[in-house]
Amino acid sequence: MIIHGAVVDEETRCVHYRSERDIIAIRFACCGRYYPCIKCHQEAETHLVRTWKPEEWDQKAVFCGSCKQELSIRDYLSAAGACPSCGRSFNPGCQKHWHLYFEIGQQFGCPR
Image (cartoon, rainbow, N blue to C red; front, top):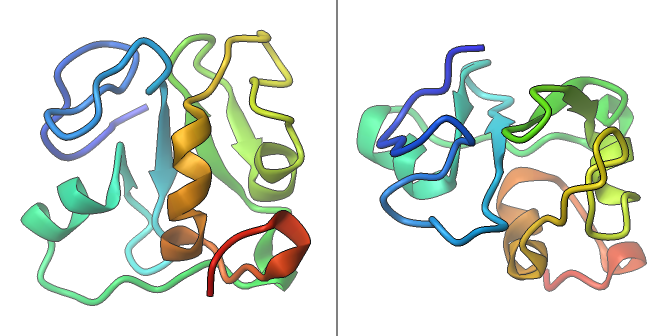
């Protein structure tokens, strides 16, 4: 899997987010490229970000840097903070940014 942006290790951590649990990359709906975070996308691309619509959530668009599995958006959002494939914990702070990647509402407790 090719992860674009300022990636600093094989588990997809980047210069912006590099804690032990920052192990995902997201395929952006606008360009189809995987980036560790929105900041990496903004630094590399000139187009606007498009969020994934709920009817697109069966698309595989989340990459676990630990087990190297692609997850559907729906599986990622419902994963209770850990990879459903390998069990590694995801950074709980990522939920604060879900609305930047996914067209999401209060069903996941996200700000609008």
